Length: 410
Image 1 (cartoon, rainbow, N blue to C red):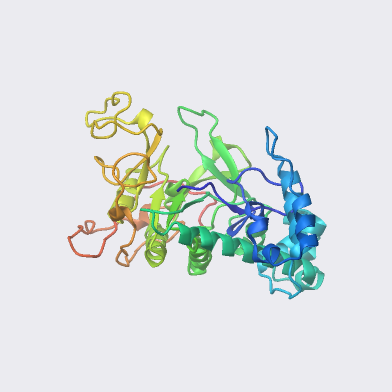
Image 2 (image 1 turned 60 degrees about the vertical axis):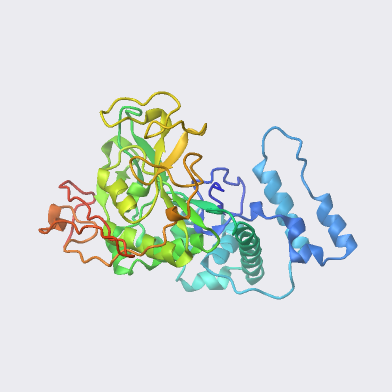
């Protein structure tokens, strides 16, 4: 069961309606909570239950009013919140400050713009920090219940990881030391969009991320895998390179490379630890090494049936899959090999436990460095070959020369 991204948004109006521009990818949006299924509601007295029930918004509307739904659920949860204080993390602290100063931390008073500043702890209301920490408790509880309920499914619950976060949101505030400032990511001009695309999301800074031992990236994956049997990663090519855009004009961007060995290795390791499948969305302008490395690490890739071609490069007949078999009605499928589809989330091909990403790749050594602007990562030896052993060896990325922005400094 593939879910849309359920990541947290800023707790102020207007509530962000897009799941692909969250405030935090490490936390969950409380708007998805089922208030009447919480332990606190079930143990409440009749008068409290009636007060909570009375706050339920009208469901007979054509469009979802996110602000109205948010207000109703938060008001209901305020009625049943526990008396015992919770110890909040950086996200709960951000929420408490955002309720006072707004969603964009870049517009906060200067002394609050970095989470390590003493003023942050001094000014964040402990009661509000505790409340938002408790909301995440509830989210974790209900997500875990859902995960356990899906244990008997072939794949189970598959969560969705967007490319990045709101540049003024909780993760951008808490993780600003490992994010690149002054740039956003997107896609270069192509045949479908001659202006390119600016997604307005800040990228990881490759060198700062490496200096941090990739801990923020690892913590993100662990947070998402905690309640899922699978993970779809939007624009998985971003583990190799991202189109950085200075100044907002996507036509003037350039690719900046990451240490793909480290990024994919950590992904495979955390998926293995979680016993989860990985589905990489590798559509669009993507190097072949991306799909090849996914397959070599027992991860699934994606394909749009309408644009699939046969071995001669010709468009496949309408309604057929990669090997000429009749495809399912869903326009999106996943591929594990060029001639097969083996994920129940695909809507095509047999369901199989073999699609689970449960093998850990060998730890590679790398001569190059993350964020390098030169082909210094070129290898002098051929890539290792896969064997029939229980281990799965990654395919080495093909080095490409190119420019990098900002310029490399010493």
